Length: 156
Image (cartoon, rainbow, N blue to C red; front, side, top):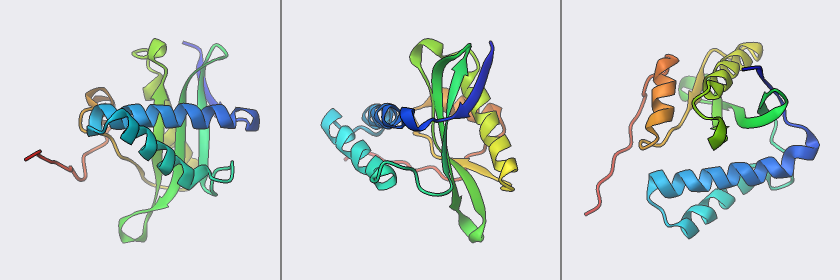
């Protein structure tokens, strides 16, 4: 594996927005139980909060995971205040293309996120993960992440 992360270029922005929105919608549909239409609407609405003017807000950054020059994944991070007034680097998206999964790219991206936090002088990385995403949850645990809160629900 000859992989690295690099910043998203301006000419890649629209394609990233499309891919990130589609990936988020798929996750919402699969893991949050929404219909395809509901998931797509929510993903588009949520994404518009961040990229409505065609740029990312201050403190946000997107990196592409490349392996031998081929883009195989994405990492979106942002500085965000959390409990007690501290700042965390929050992972909004870590995604590896289906054909490239299981080869360590997700781990590489998460290690990069930790490095990025240190570069910014931030002492904590946080993220949200759907309960049904067992592969991602296993990766995060293997990297030392701990569950802070768990949302549970039951249909009645």
